[in-house]
Length: 88
Image (tube, helix red, strand yellow):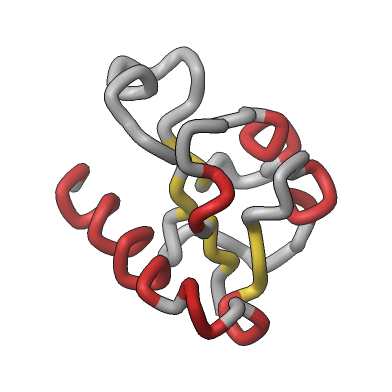
C-alpha cells in the first residue's frame, strides 16, 4: 500500500519529503512548473515503494501509510490518486 499525503500539507508544501524519496514519487517538487498552483504535495500510488522515509521528514505530520490514515482524511486516498491521473 502506498503512503498518502493528507490535509496538514495544504498550504505548507514543505518539500523535505520530496528530497528523501528514493523513487521520486512525491510531486510537484519545487522545481516543477505546477508547484505554485498546487495546494499540497501528492504521492503517486503506482510509484511509491512504501519505504516510509517521507513520514519522518514531514514537519506537519501529513504523511501516513494508507492503512493508518485517520478516518477523517480517507478522502485523500482518492485526491492523491486523482492528481496523478490528470498528470498522465
